[in-house]
Image (cartoon, rainbow, N blue to C red; front, side):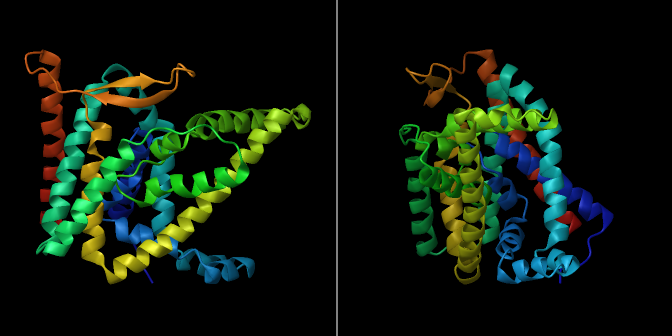
Length: 326
């Protein structure tokens, strides 16, 4: 049984959830990075892995209190309260900053992630040559994923289900962005824009007691796509969390080494100096980003570098404060 949390611990966990939600909002960044850097990654994996046969049995027997305890509900409820708050507030603010000050925002998060990886590496201690090899493999994998060429859109429900299983990994695997993977698979617009819009308009119609959408085959197809994507995401979350928990139990240092390498390899996804490359067919859809080196003679680039240092400094201060409070 998990120990009862104090009011301060509850507030801190909600704030971590907000940070996780904000990270998921940033293209190329995963909420898993926040979980790993903030020190609740293993508990997150543990909690997700508790959604098993025992949990279903308790739920069907209406033993809700036992179910809540079994899945570490106190942790998950507080964390996802923060995620929801971030969706309706912090993410909206972040959208404005990204729109008007994109390089400064990227620079801030680049510095924060770089510092987080540095402190995670320090905590790991006594790296053997095997861990270094695993880190290099993670680095190569991260680079490979971020440079993949996007595929073509596919609304086959089996493929959509698989997309759901793959995209949810952004919440579980630090450095792996679920939205970026959907872009690589070619289904970003279909699953995160068209299907979401179809669901929104359907909910509006239902509230208005308008059932005319039942005669719209395109709307019904998109709703079917959304259902398959949701089921795939839930399945992927449960399967991946169980597998990761087993690996963390038996190979903790190697898994952390792999994740560190993967995060370093995917850092180019949030490199502040980049230009969007748009799809020649769908003009508004971004296919990839072209990276470039900054000119240090330009004042804006100096500001961006200061934001990178600021991000590194924020994480350093938080790490220092955390050690003193421990």
